[in-house]
Amino acid sequence: MSTLLQINTSLHSDRGASSQLAGRYVKRWQAAHPDGTVVLRDLAATPVPHLTAERFQAFLETPETRTPGQVRVVAESDTLIEELKQADEVVLGLPMYNFGVPSTLKAWIDHVARAGVTFRYTGHGPQGLLQDRRTLVFAARGGQYRGTPADTQSAYIERFLNFIGIHDIEFIYAEGLNLGDAPRRDALNQAHREIEGLAA
Image (cartoon, rainbow, N blue to C red; front, side, top):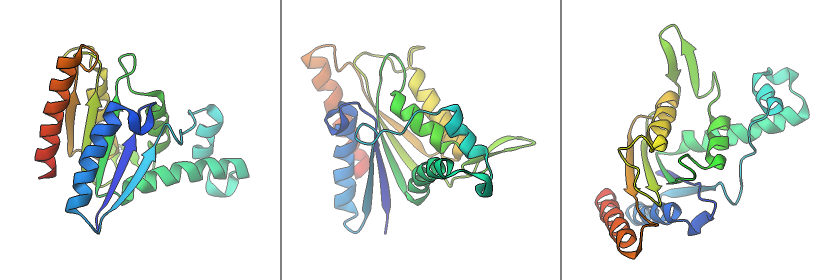
């Protein structure tokens, strides 16, 4: 039985364009996998706390020296990591805010990147510890940024996923959503066609 992890990062939750594109794909995935399981991680509904020195210290402590508060912090991180480990496929809804990723997604990343858990340092550099899995990134932008220096998102997300061991990554873009009705319609129609191809 397959498991899909859907991560919505829009501050509008499931109403955001990136979440709706991701949800459109997930519905088709469910139709093709009637016995499959979808795990939804909505970072607007249940935001991950931003990393602090105290939270980071909890990761560094050995299990036997952690305080009750540190145990809770590590358990929250472990839950996020376990969701990734159990997923055969990952679907990420990714809006662009002020040329970057949503801060809630950065907080999620900071709790998933754990030395000795999702990556390790070796004499040949860092090594990801997660098994590779198909990952689809639905990137929705108000302007046109793909292939320009202003697209800081794509390389960052790809580099992070590679860092923890995930290399099978595909981006589906819907750009120009704030440039007028026609550009928005064209961008969404193109993204919908790509989704149909992916689902097939």
